[in-house]
Image: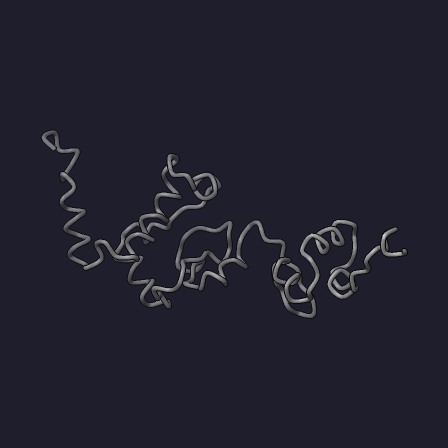
Length: 164
């Protein structure tokens, strides 16, 4: 602080958070975690975010701006921050507040299938049509069409025990 490079011992940040009434809130934790996973290589999630080039927009580097956007765009305590495009940045036109269940549909690891105009993750189709997830995966990996994989009934092979 003596040489002028550091302007505060940290009390300014604390004062700013308290001034806006956001200190210790869920919004502050979400905001802080978002910034950490995008900018701190020591963060355990960095490789999935900042390590892939995902950034936080300049506007949202200020908590008040992020909170203002959140409260104006559907934030509720039961919702989670989601990026519409998983390869896109944290910015107003790429983010939304959705339920945990909805967010599970928007993961990089999901295998999405479109059938009859409906797009769902493979595990959801499995539950919906009553065919084991592994069976559907094998069918698709063997080159079956999505329609055939989801609609053809499962035939059990008879075993020597069943034929007795």
